[in-house]
Image: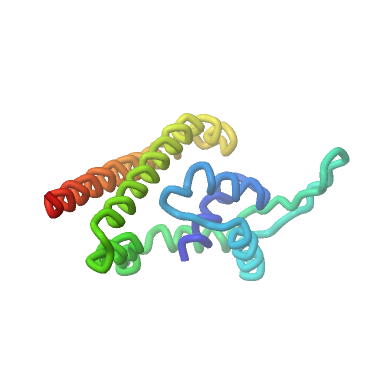
Amino acid sequence: MPLKHAILGLLNYADMSGYDIDRFFKSSIAFYWHAQTSQIYKELNNLTANHYVESDIVYQSDKPNKKLFHITDEGKVELHRWLADANIDDIMKYKNPLLIKIFFSGNLGIDQTMRLLEKYIQSCAQIIEDMNADINKISEFETQIEQKDESFFWSMTMTYGFMYYQNEIKWANWCIDKLKERIS
């Protein structure tokens, strides 16, 4: 399960609170793996129950106490096992609600389908803009986890994201052009 392994991967970098993990998800991983705050905390409980992570309470006088999680040796074994697993069957399973909507858009008017695609283009453009802001935070994350070599791999995922959303915009514009041809 990618959420479990994403959390283990983050904790392999550094000890983090649930808040830190949630913040990291929202600022760097969200464009390819979304997780709700409640899902993260639920998964932290499962990881603790499976002895993949442990936590310590950090007492703070000026703020509420916080729970700091760290990966265990068992957690590292599980993370490395998952990373090395070459089975890509689950990776190749693809679900896209937009494509289902487009597939059945013959039931709508062309104008409604074009509005859906235009909204999708705007959303993709916003994600690209957000990713541009996030890419500038990589050095901050490197400092936080004290592992400078990781940014090489992070840039691979960021480049994938940029290319993916740029291609989505290109495809949606192509669809709009095809729809315009139908009404001319």
